[in-house]
Length: 267
Ligand SMILES: [Ca+2]
Ligand SMILES: [Ca+2]
Image (cartoon, rainbow, N blue to C red; front, top):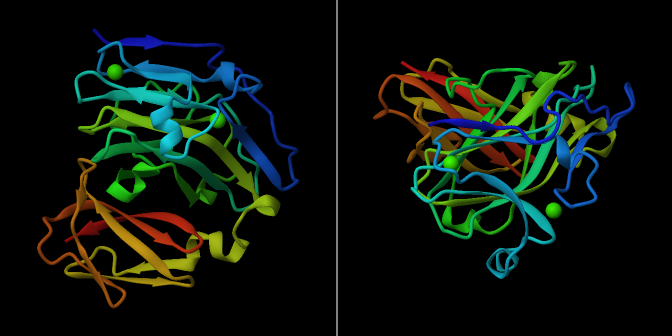
């Protein structure tokens, strides 16, 4: 039986930014003194009674670089489907929004997760389109910082961020230090953080997808509709998609200035 567990006031709106001023839009440390901690909720979609929980790091988590308190999604069945849902908050109307967090797993790979940004009150079905998803590589099972541009959500009122540990054959996912910023405290220059600094073409694509980026591309991942990380050759600024089935794919491009996610259609 599926069960939705709600902790705290799910729809309590949290106003943590000064409108029109750059800075911190939302911050969560998952520590006991965090004022927003009580407003997170979880949903155990696979119904195995294992879910996201807030814990003080254990020695195995300390060993992979986590400190203090963290959120851990666990599963007994090795087929987790656990949702962690942020408090409701508003994105400021302007200003290069940036989402960062730290992610990892003590249980090895492949650990898969997705992030959704949805209007408050959404009845989650699993068919929503993630803003980002990935399967961690063996090197990324340690506490790994992630940083991505979410400026397309500028001005949206009453939204929640969902972290979904699913489609994964590993039983633990660890999350800490969720931070949404605008403009001034952004770690990147605005021009670099903006989506336009990475261009992909053609889209739809037949064989080779070109990637043009202002900053050096560190890695490229191609994720299919089922959330699987597909091996694709990235060479000379091109991804070879010749042997891919037609359909929708997500391209996650990690540059020196952060992670950018793009949707493409393979013809
Ligand atoms: Ca579960
Ligand atoms: Ca923490």
